[in-house]
Length: 419
Image 1: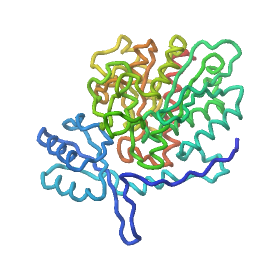
Image 2: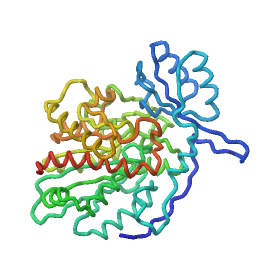
Image 3: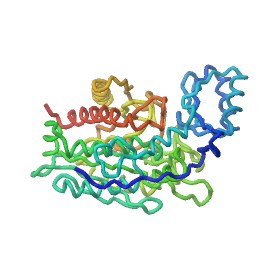
Image 4: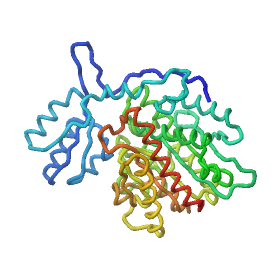
């Protein structure tokens, strides 16, 4: 299939400093720090309060722990002072990314506008993804249906694909969403890859499943935030909703669900990257998806939310440490999924319930889906573990999607009891 792919444009980036002349290169960097004591944690927190870096990992200052890596994006104007302070205090650090701007430029390179073969090995701005959605819907009308589920905070349109190729009523459905957090570009890339794989698939298992099972795919959930990462701030996480009592913008869509809302791992402060919102489902993006899934809660058998980065397959619960009633089965399925990942390119993923595997976080979509009755609820954290973080280069899109596809296939096979 060949069709016209619109060329993406290069935006300006808040927080990303570009060289002002050929002779002077200014570099933003990402540092990795692993505190070894409570004293080092307190020192690092003071550094964060003073210089206000962007948290890549974990998602907030409150989640800093002993012997857990912290990945901080630091402006070039502050980087040498931060390094000096860390060295003076004997806090060990290493540079993960020495030139952030270079990797951003690499991510924004696009394929030739009429060459489809490399389309899925590049990242694409929102208008290109919208265009591609329309084209693939036209190309495969018997398999693909595009469903409008609602507007975003800034009134952009949120679409879900429905994939199905059967003649009899479907026996169930799988839901997959991507792009809940705006800066995680590999997630929407995977959803596009997944749909293309399904419609073009020579895989007998996939072909057979689609005859009796629907797959819903939300390729870009946080459409406003994703657009903002292309035009203004590459590392924006939240949506772009306005708050009456604060000049800060945005809510974390994965803290806005009605499940342990605004508990551990969430914040009631609108300026926080993990702000939980005014109330559960206060955000139109969350409300649209929650409404769609509720209306089909008896039909949807599996839920997968795709994120990055950390290389993990996780399942409920996130907001509490107690195990779910289906813990043993979900753990078994997650193990099979990570084994499938490893079989493709040898990539190692961790697996387990979220609270123990990554950290406590409240108001998350997979917990909500599970408590709604969708037993097979999972969250994927795709590549990598920090070498590139949110700036995963285009040449790693293909292997990342191939191995994630293997994991989805394993989960889908378990749900549908394929042979």
